[in-house]
Amino acid sequence: MGAHNGEDRSITAEGMRRDFGALHAVDGVDLEIPGGRIFGFLGPNGAGKSTLVKILTTILNPTAGRATVAGYDVQKQGGKVREAIGVALQDVGLDPLMTARELLMLQAELFGTPRDEARKTAERLLVTVGLDDVDPKKRAGAYSGGMRRRLDLALALVHDPRILFLDEPTTGLDPASRAAIWEEVRRLNDELGMTIFLTTQYLEEADRLADEIAIINKGRIVAQGTPSDLKREVGDEVVELQFASSEDAASADHALAAVAPNRQVGGGELRLYFARAAENVPELVRALDGAGIRLQGLTIEQPSLDDVFLRVTGEALEHEVNEAGDEGSASPASSDLDAPPGNDDRAEVTS
Amino acid sequence: MNDILLLIGRSLRVAIRQPVAILPNIAISVFFLFVYNSGLSSVAELPGFQGTYLGFILPVSLVSASVGGAGLAGQTLVKDLENGYFTKLLLTPTRRLALIWGPMVASAIILTGQVVLVMLLALVMGLKVAAGPIGFALVVVLAFLWGMAFAGYAAFMALKTKNAAAAQAATFAFFPLIFLSYTFVPQEYVTAGWLRVAATINPTTYVFDSMRSLLNTGWDATSLLVGFAVTFGFATVTGIMALWAARGVTKMTS
Image (cartoon, rainbow over the protein chains, first blue to last red):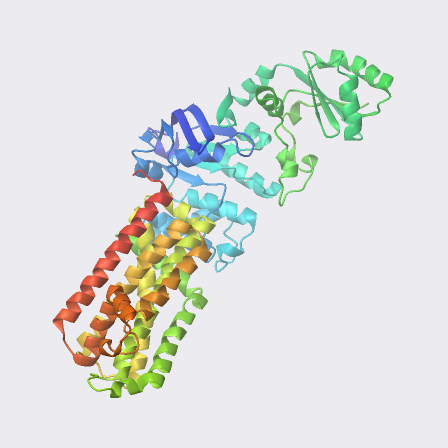
């Protein structure tokens, strides 16, 4: 596949552990990621995602365990690993006094690219990430958050890596910047066969991009598979009820306890899990009527990764697209990219 | 070697973009030269004093320029650590040595420029270098090496503390290094026992001696050898300290 056909693009980990004092940030992770895939590593803040990325990219030594990236041992062959990988960490590291071209050229030259070639690489990548029309004299310190992310992605690509690590590449980005990065990630994987290891706390990001997903919680992988496999494992259909207030939702949660044993309440919404959702809707509506609770909306959905996450961890993963948005305060419906996972499967029923 | 050159070039470029980090250091060196030379020049009239007071006080100004200029290496490293660019560089195949040496050599180059500027100013003020043009060049080389030694110390403090304020505070070593020595008058006129002890321990004393011999009295092999040996020794120790601290920061095994 692509320019590096035949070269090892896999990632493996065996009993990977990293402690910080008494905290087990990564607690016995095993991975087997074949080359050429987009692997999504999903988990809440503090789950151990970034620590694992730092270990796999040779920045941090593990406390125990063994890992290989591109066929090289991350501890014993760090130099070889670094030649094979591109990395864009969550904390974007740019020298604020340098321009984008200077940063790209220096990075390329440090990877051994001759100067003329490095200049061409810089120009090509600026086009790729859509920064070619920025004032060439503008220094990285004056870039917006989205521009910094895009430049950081370009920096990770200067040496045509076989494997790309992206640690929460779209956290805090506006929908347009997020869409641009998603598109580029897809292209790199499709056209160049690059293995992409992507951590995210956005369920929809993992759902849309990843061929395979691992869910990490408290340093351990709690579920792994393709997005559809994982959702299938949850097995049920979901009825989502919308209320005017969280108090109404809480009352409904109480009122429907007998009708729907599996429930999740959050804000003004109540999610109910059934084997066949539609059969239960009349009884739900009757029960709510009986309790005098006014329903504002009702939808039947396929289970989402939200539900998978809830099932395997017992905790809800927040829907960050709306909540994390430093720049993106758009509602889920404002952009197709922001729509919740499983949106295409959604069957709307008005109440 | 190429990675070191690239990183030296990058540190120089960035340093030039923030002249505010360089100019005060030049101003302090020039201030020392003017104020002490005009205020204390009668010291040269004491019996037994060799050469001019300008040649005697100039090394204080030069060491001030080199110690102050070397602090730039620490500031560059702290900024890189704070804004994450150091990690970006760590993710390249660049040698760890190059990551530390880039800012160190760059700051030594900048401080050498400052030293040459101050020396040219001294020439304008009437300085006659006893050891001639080669002596002039050796004074510059000594200042460069002393700057490298202090850059190693600044890099060590930066990598250990990872904190701009702490790294800045570390440059206060500047004061004992410069003033606990035979800074303003020759050794024979210093009577305080504690200062004589401090001056003997202080490696700067031997740098002053070497520079003063070149500027005021001509070629003195013993003074030169001791001066260069102390400077190399100090630079080696601080260089090893910086690399050791770098290992801690990078957590690298290869």
